Length: 126
Length: 95
Image 1 (cartoon, helix red, strand yellow):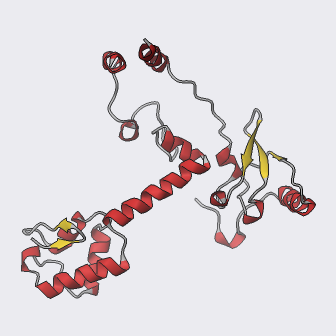
Image 2: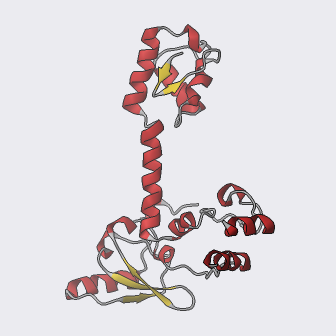
Image 3: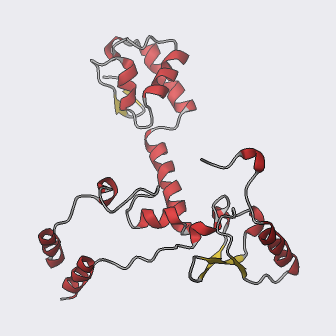
């Protein structure tokens, strides 16, 4: 199984899709990489030659921010917002949506699972 | 939609004048302002603003990281008091 940027690429998938298993690589960047390295998007990951894998790896390292570095970058951006105490930072602090969505209903992605009255009591008892 | 780049960042003209005056004075005082829509420019670093939130003025000390944000972002307009459930939680915790 080829490892690129610390992530296993699934063997049976087309490389165009396989690359999107890397954090920070979606379909668009995946296609860009493959056109630049002159690899056919339809090749299965297992059919890649070692040179091709090396070429992809090289390009990813030099041109794009992926995985750990990208996660770190996102975190520092959020920390900056929180530290300067702006509106978005406050919303991050309180775990609510930052882009003006309504919170009367929904917003469950940010708020997390719904706490029912009974469940809350249980938690508080601990 | 964001503001057109052609126009450059928006800073209220009177505020801009005040910023320059306070900077020149050497001993800057707090600048009271209602202009929440003004962008924080690099000139404002180190100054303190009192930004109106509709009810009172919130003191905002401008640091380097705040450049590019708007003054209103640092002066929340809504007050949130925790829900009744939240209070119960804290009471339960004390026991």
